[in-house]
Image (cartoon, rainbow, N blue to C red; front, top):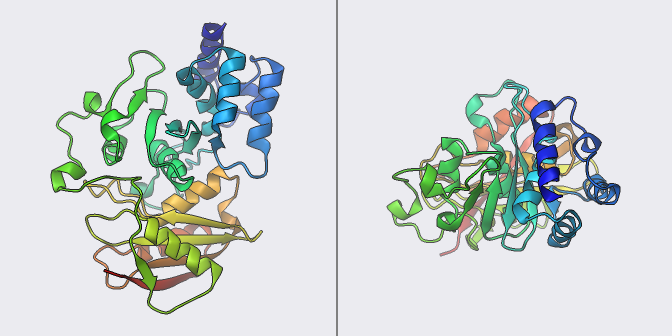
Length: 319
């Protein structure tokens, strides 16, 4: 039966478009009790693009599917969150953390912004896992081979050598299979890598007890900036009072780096929040950093919530 389910879902993916895609359309050919369980997870008000290990095991058992097949089953659902007003090319990804949880990711484009701002689905899935406390990604599925840009980004991960890229159409890959003569943190003498546990030991220049400022400071302390040392983090408050964080994530090749604003927009998006729900934004970064996020954040806010002003708070590192 599991092979029949996989074939059905490949058929649905091939012939459905984003504008027509609904959860019920994607899940219509599986047993109703499993469909209801998946819909209940996604429709929960606290859903943030995560299927926890217990739910993954339930789906696997009920449908007699392997982890790879469950990931391929759920991946089309992540496409529903894609925002691509420039390309109209909707991409969804799914990654598996060492906890056994599965994490959605979807591409995001900002209308009127440069294409270089685009967040790819693989990046979105990885930072989703990172924001939920994962320190290792075991598997990732984007429906085929990631683009070169994403391979370079994935090569920054702390366990990049063991990451399995799932190819639903055939043989699975490792990064070294697809990215020949890779350039990454090891080439620059960097130990660890993206998603390694760390605390940047940053403190505010001026003490504050404001919740949003402290959340942004925490994000800056979580950030990964081994090349520029431009540690930074962002915190966003939505109109319902919820706070979302975004960490800066550098890359050895620089361009695939993720800005804090990209990170936090992905978190908002996967939690079902629209960008116009943003009411307050705080960015914490080091003063006179070689790599500043201020202008990037301002430019993006100007496109999505022009009436919201950025509050910049400076910090410094305690040696």
